Length: 190
Image (cartoon, rainbow, N blue to C red; front, side, top):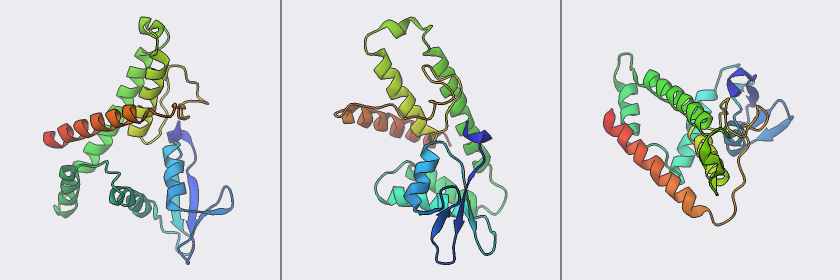
């Protein structure tokens, strides 16, 4: 699981270039986003001062994806985040978000356990494909963090993205719509 791994150390040089200390090469924000999607934690530090810049770069990655139309956060949630920063006092929003993602990962684990081979549904034609799509959806929802107990997965394969045949864009669009609906409901609750 990503939580037990040592974070990948990325150093930012004075030229603002980002250097992967494991592979000894320069990386981009997209590369870093890929590491995170694959379940890897990262730590970005300024080479000269030693300051931790991880938050700043993670926010930049989110902002770039949002600006390209890959919106994940509804406007209501973004407004609430801004309010939490401007409120002056201690905000409960960060703790709420952390608890929400913890519950999502826990729910993911329970759901995947229910979809195990012991489930009589596993004999239904197309079940394997549906299960692979569900695993991909859950991986996308949790930022690629693997969860123990995934059906059909071992500790080595939990973070792999299942291959999808071309033409499954309708399924992906349906998942995106479901995600948007869930986000809208969540924003209405707060």
